[in-house]
Length: 400
Image (cartoon, rainbow, N blue to C red; front, side, top):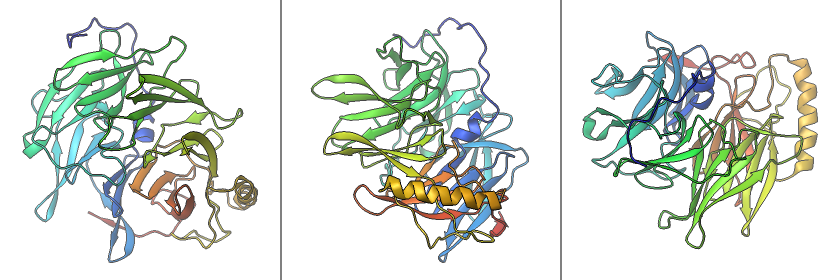
């Protein structure tokens, strides 16, 4: 299928007001050291560590922000309420803003790549490096970033549909961008050949318009998978292996009473995939001796304190469903005493903070970190008070 201009598909596409913020609410800046949070009100905060002290740093801009769409070589790419793509970067000792949409052939954007790298992995800068974005009108846009030679390129869209989101950019396949069409089907764009390709998909399988997550067993092998959600809230895997080529696998849901919400991921070591349930619990889909299994990680247990600090004496592990159930009952009783606190997990897309750590947002606006404590064991390690959460009043913020 050639990369020609397709006939304009019928129907308008209006994303929900909070779609960008829910999918691009958090972004890692420096692995294990700092990440950004974009509030629903459009404020920009960076959570960072200095001399073993964690604090919030506020970054000001005249227009409200909607999300953090990418991170390249220490520069953060954000989208504001006018759908302009902006770069926040350090220029010598100062922090500067660059408006990419104002450049030649610049466009308004609504989405970007779900991840910058696989957890624990980093790619060296290359002369052909570029970030891909989804335009407001549903086109795939390429923005060259290597050597700061910024340049826009319109990659258009498949013949049969506009683009809803980017499922993966070059983590599963080098030079290939996987996208989900507004029709719920999977396509790919090859940035070398500039050709579009539609992947085979049964008619009954309709994909959610949320971003996906790539899983690679090894950087030396092409074998891997792309995980996405179906429109009805089930987990879907698009797997490639040398024996059978491409195959669709439907994993369903962890429980008949639960559907999966938000976006899948992150994925660790090619075997641990995190997902969020409609019940506010985190679920782990993991490989055990070649067999996929479900495990409930619940949500973090909070002590009955006047305010919640960054660390908890009590921890819940993603190893025992009985323990999780008991702690959740205790938590529900505590929440009845504090109406501003709800430690169930929000549908905001989480981020991998390091190769052994993942950050989730809670429904009350706080953040919670889960850390790996063994080969398959993950533990809720701490909650993080945020400047906008009413559950926590103590945090340290300064202005950049």
